[in-house]
Amino acid sequence: MNAAENIESIFDKNEPVFSRNDFIKKFEEKNIEVWLKREDLLHPEVSGNKFRKLKYNVLEAKKLQKQLILTFGGAFSNHIAATAAAGKLYGIPTIGVIRGEELAKNLQQTLRSNPTLKFASSCGMDFHFVSREDFRRKNDPDFIESLYAEFADFYLVPEGGTNEFAIKGCEEMLSEEDKNFDLICVAAGTGGTASGLINTSGENQKVLVFSALKGDFLKDEIGRFSNKKNWTLVSDEHFGGYAKINEELVSFINEFKTEFGIQLDPVYTGKMMFGIFEMIKKNQVPENSRILAIHTGGLQGISGMNRRLEKKKMSLIIE
Image 1 (spheres, rainbow, N blue to C red):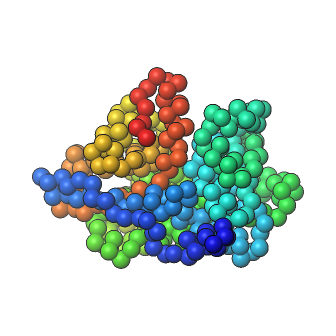
Image 2: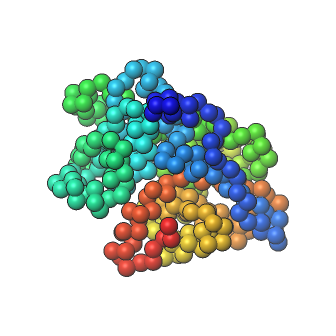
Image 3: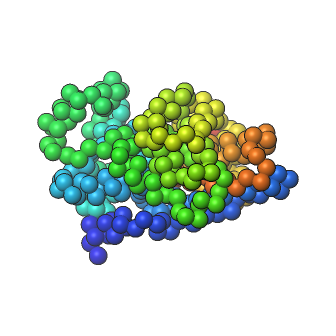
């Protein structure tokens, strides 16, 4: 089976290839069950919600006979790593527009010190490093036009992967048996995964969206793709902002792995699970609730985070 056939056969499956639900903890005094849906097991390289977001984007690129996929991301982006892996599996070249032009000064040194970009490069992704100022123009039509002029007729996937095709993929996360849960919990960066879950959630279910970023702007982003009102944005469990972390969160992630044998990432799912446990402890979750939390992957970023923690002389995340 060649690479193109392999990725298409995987993307054509509506149900997870390896995913399962893991029973995490029953808070017996409140009769609360917490289950974790293992989207991180969907694929070993195109993991979690990135698999869902890229599925229909890759198939659309094929339909349009595009010869190249271009996308945006930071130097430790899960989306960059997943897009590179998908491109390799499907057999279509990829370009990552990366924030931080200084990273291009010594590319080999950058790849040695950055496991995310090293992996993306090993998958065949080419990089286009831009200044932070230019990166902020990633939605500017003039800037996009300049990229078309440089790289020809590529298929564009936005930063984080969220667009109508990503929403369609994320709408396939919940199975019929998942309708038996009262609460669906998910971490959010751009809001695409949450929007898909909200769209397919049951009438009697509530979705809790744990923002990985400061502020409430995700309310507007989610509102672009979903008109349902059965969700709440939890915006106080970001630990200081996107990719910010402290000893308390590191300790929680390590204890979680020791107790349940499941690796959490420090940017999204780790913060979400911490938030769920805190809400239960503070009696903010109704008794007799059944909670389904979504593990959205992102584990490739742990090595990079540990390098940052080591420089700060902080505890490391157990891998």
